[in-house]
Length: 356
Picture 1 (cartoon, helix red, strand yellow):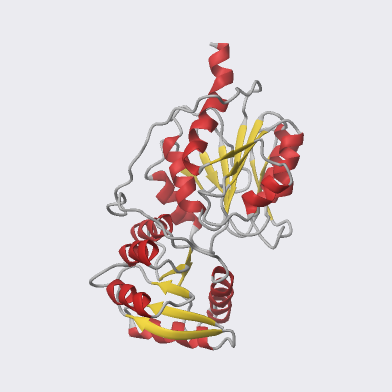
Picture 2: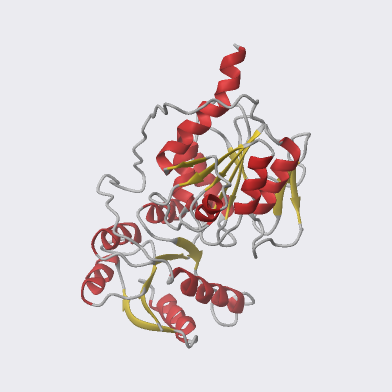
């Protein structure tokens, strides 16, 4: 039985969440909190197996509550938000940065055409996230969702890649948004290749995610459509509900091909496309996430001569996808999250430097 604390300041939304969660025989709502302060106090005396966390609440918001809980009594947290606007999404993704696992849109009310679908998604997410073992996180340097400390890094001892890099492909799932945000924020504005990203997330959040990334990235961030032409120094986030690849002419391919590993978009599809088209002229990066999406295809990229990178265990929220890649020898480099941008820059810029 999964014991859940529902944190929600709207009585109507709270009752809906309780009704949906208690409708599953494997879930029991053991308490509610109307703000972040109540949530922190509840966790201190009765630790739930999982928390659904609203973001905008009186007294203490979901970001601050998530940070305090992960610093003191860590519990799996699923952010459940009613809005996809950029300000609320920014706070939601910052909550993930301090330890929350994922973000979902609040289920539609009973009678709405999407009620059953969104209710099933909430139940499935709660069951999946409750299995994750979370650890205590210390984030006292994170002053607010609007303040991000940036570090310039020098990565020594990394062998240069001799081939010209024509594309970078990144795959991520649980815990991925803040890692991707930090990587993009540290790439130089003249980064010489397009960056293609598959981030598993709930439907309706991709455009807000791209806008959020664009606030700190020196590279323009887009959600492309089928046939969009890529440019160096630009970032392309895979749209919901399609598989994303790339052709030799540099065009984005968004197709209705079948899900892979139960996912669409999937990192496996993207990596295979990049391996086929660009071979050694590519870099593949597999970040934190549940499951094994992208692991085998990252190995395919490596076999084709591409540079392949997996996030290390210590910096991963969930060491599923990168762990699978490491297990099968798919990663040339296994790196902490805060070193990946510097290595990408070193590798991608090295060919240019040699030709100058």
